[in-house]
Each structure stands twice: as structure tokens, then as C-alpha cells.
Length: 171
Image 1 (cartoon, rainbow, N blue to C red):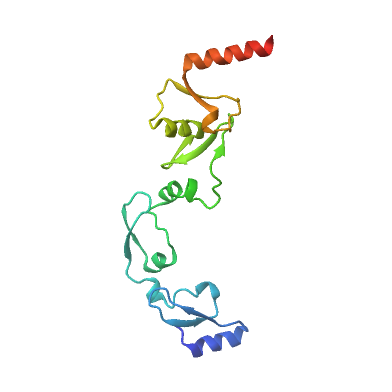
Image 2 (cartoon, rainbow, N blue to C red):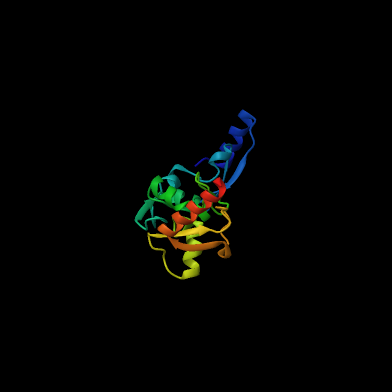
């Protein structure tokens, strides 16, 4: 660890500004001419014993470097867990879902992407939809997912409904 006198001498030689920092490991005040190094006072603190913590996504026990632990608020065992955790509503640019290429809006529910109209209908019925059940939009607007605009029907009824609609448009 450089002394204050040594830091002042270095600053005069290079005409640089002196920065004051508080070590995130030992909490000592120190001085440096490098602003990017104003978090850890010495090589000793950088190599301090490691801290045991838990991955936020998979809950696996991990060991982090002491200074890494205090600098970062979120700890993951790898980039895969980090990517899976920071999705949906947790992500900084989340705006409440996105519209797929087929025109339907998707939302995140329990870290899974689900079609919003199906989720709305499941909430109304208080049960999960069966595989043969289709949620039909009455006004044909795929992003209008108001409960009064949605009807549940089986596949056959839905197909026949759309065939009738196509015939009307042709005639």
C-alpha cells in the first residue's frame, strides 16, 4: 500500500489529481492517482479470503472473491444463470411483454413466456386450459385481451367459426 507521501510525489511527477477511496474490504481510507482503482487499497485486500454466498437463480453455493462480493449486489454461479435470472419484469428494459411475429402478445409468468390471452382466460376460469381449447378474440384484434373480448371454445368449433367468417368475406 502506497503511503500518502508517495502518492503525492507520484501525482506531482505526472501532474495528476489525487483520489481518495475507502477500501471495500478493510474500510480504510486510502489515496491513489488512479480513479479506477479507488475501491481496494492494496494487493493484500484484493487477495483476501473468499466469501461463501448463493447463486440467485439456481441457489447453488458459490465462492466469490471478497472484493467481488461487496462490489456486486447480484451473485451468480455462471453467465447462464445470470441470463436466466435477469429476464422479464426483472430486466431493466422490460415493458410488460412483447408481440410475437404471429401478432399475439406474450408475457412472463413464473419465468415462462405465455400468450397473454390464454393467461387472462386461465385467470377468469381459475384453471389451466386444456390442449384442445382455443381462446378466440371476438373482435379479431389479437392484442385486445380484455376478458369481455375473449371466448373459450374447442378446436372444431373455432375452425368452423373462421370458415364461416371467410365465406362471408368472399360472398
